Image (cartoon, rainbow, N blue to C red; front, side):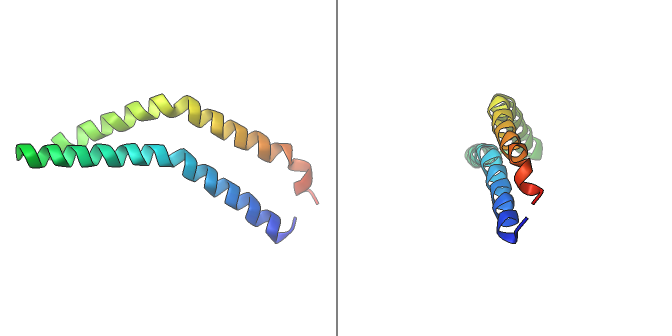
Length: 89
């Protein structure tokens, strides 16, 4: 296994991790911005008022995106294990 091949595998792994985490991070970021704006408008500065809705949005988005995430992880795993013979060299 050459160093270039290892770098390619690591790059694919990191890109897959980025694509899997990006939607959840963007949804969490958007929910945080919306909750901050609501707090500014209503002058409510309670930590629970900010945290609980963001966690709920994150949980719901995780549940909704889970089939897509599992499909992506499965495709990556099949691709890596399908080339297992190339790793033995």
